[in-house]
Image (cartoon, rainbow, N blue to C red; front, side, top):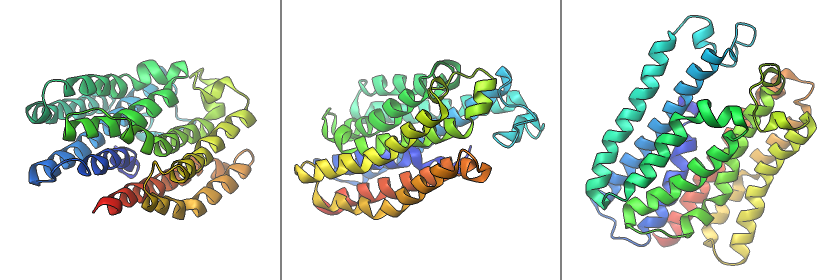
Length: 286
């Protein structure tokens, strides 16, 4: 399940939810719907994690030689069928929660639900091996999660959750970029076909750094033009995390530990930045 990664789903939902709370009457039912959305988001990400582990094992990408990446199946701790069934069970539970969403806001929420099923269920089978993994994460988690949450709570579509959530969208994409850089040479050998694998190692690392840095640039622009409320500047408290990410990336090519840390350090940056951004928006209207 990789629970330490699930804030990747929690943060965009909170961003969309806190923005929606500014425009609706916040009652107990609305809060319950937000909580259910957080749970659904975590289930979707868990499904993607589990089905990715299963898919990589079936394709022969995960082997005994690189078992530190995802050891559960190659070491025999878990059975492939059990992992696949648990991933499908997570999708099934998400669908059950979706029934409550339909009663709350209407059938149109099914559009977001269908896109979520496609994004999570087919991540490994379709997107990852065709250089679309980062695109999938950017769109599904960075854009559709905050927008879908906003729609659920308000019944309307608006650009605000998309634009306010844009910095976080780049950061969560950067986490996957770090994953692809950590596994760069193993994925090349296994012909995985990730986005980073289509570039040189140095170019891929430059993309990874860009995805981390651009989040701060976009937020600065949104604050300067007055689109983002000023308390969202709290997210800049995570600038030290950015510094650590960038310094670590300089050593990754020659240091195995630094290469391994490309993912957890970016996750930490994403968590701190995204949570502070969401809290800042909440503080603005409370």
